[in-house]
Amino acid sequence: MAIRIKDVAEKAGVSTATVSRVLNNDPKIAEKTKKKVLKAIHETGYRMNNVARSLKTSRTRTIGFLAPELVNDFFMTIAQGVEDELKDSGYSLIVCNSNESSHEEEKRIELLAEMCVDGVIIIPSSSRGEHYNRLKNMNIPAVLVDRLVDDFESDAVLVDNLQGAYKAMEYLINKDNSEFGFIGGDLSLSNFRERYEGFCLALEYNNIPKNPDYIKLGDCHIESGYKMMEELMNQPHPPAHIFIANYFMHVGATKYLTSHGYASKAGNQTAPVHIASFDDMTLSPILGFSDLTVSQPMKVMGREAARLLLERISGENEIEENRIVRLETNLVTH
Image 1 (tube, rainbow, N blue to C red):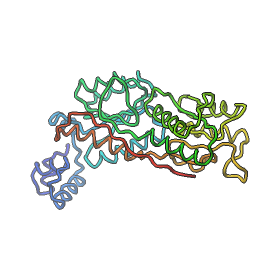
Image 2: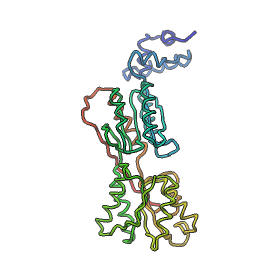
Image 3: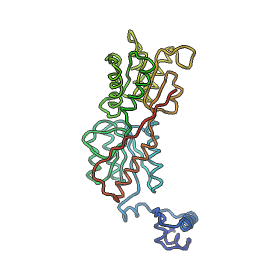
Image 4: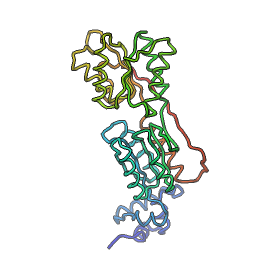
């Protein structure tokens, strides 16, 4: 026989209303009462019927998280920050992968809508955003993270990409006022575009001419970083300093240099190329040609996105304008 909320109440010696308030994380419940109810829940093996609760409250207490890929440490660290914030409020996270495809995004958004999620946090796969309006039409709030899109407006959590790239370039320029290369991703994506703008502004401010032959744009993956570094190093006079717009292209660029016998900073020789890159990840310190990385507060980005979304869901405060949160980056030297 299924355990009912009434059974839990009798076990704990409280009313069914009190049990319900504990299950819904009511902050007004005394800690002693909460512990007594939770102990009764554990001992009886009671399981809340989320479907029944959603029919009653019009909420499922679930949030969708949509990322371009799930093997990316950067995206999953953001997801960890989202979950850390949500669990404090009694929400669960449903993680989906768009495979860097707008078409797949549409299908995943439809799926999340059918699952009656209370809101969605999206790391966009492209600059297209018109299909996100499906959420708006169903009154499902959304928050964008890391990137902005065209044709869709919502709350968003970003970092100051331009300033981070500018400061990283200043660091390299102060070491040696020579020619500089750039390895970047698709400039239709707002984060890569802003990092390129920071690179260009640093050159302009320091009266350093930009060499078009030293600007390489790819698809932000390891293989692309490898290919673009190969193109730069095969120039008649390769740049001595290179800014790389994300971690995975940095890994690919390093793979090319090490596989072709270039000396790194780890040896006793002077490295032929010095690199500053966006994203300070677990393996960044051991990439031998790395002078500097730009660290993004990944978990904070996730927590902030969850906080904005929960405010929209609660409806306690009247929020009219879309909120864009820009978080600061930090420079990490190696």
